[in-house]
Amino acid sequence: MKVLKPDAIPAEPANSPLFTGGPVTRQTLLTPEMSNDFNLAVVNFSVGARNKMHIHSSDQVLFVTAGKGIIATEAHQEVIGVGDVVHIPAEEKHWHGATPDSAFSHIALTAKGSTTTQVEK
Image 1 (cartoon, rainbow, N blue to C red):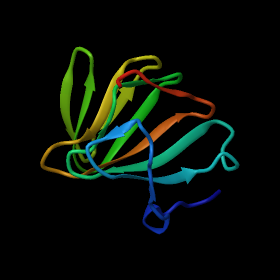
Image 2 (image 1 turned 90 degrees about the horizontal axis):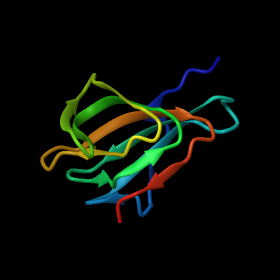
Image 3 (image 1 turned 180 degrees about the vertical axis):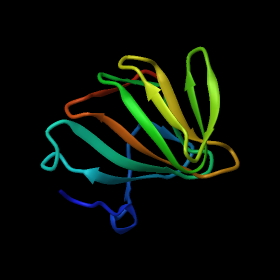
């Protein structure tokens, strides 16, 4: 067993073409060596930052931990806040990020080996 303290895990820049609108950082909670089944990380979006429309090869679960964000599919968009849990089925096109007036953080859970495909240019 291992107790993880997100405040003690350094945030690293998430430099990827998947992100737009401002800086995004990532804190990896479960490294590949730690889990046979899961990827787990805190993702921190600055005000107005988001990821572009994308899909995952596994389900994704987001646990909102700070601020106010937006979760969107091609057909629906919703504001989410602290305590909200979002389930995104595998292969569903979606994006998520901070609102224009708030930073936003969530813990993201996917299956180990899951891939992300950006579908927005």
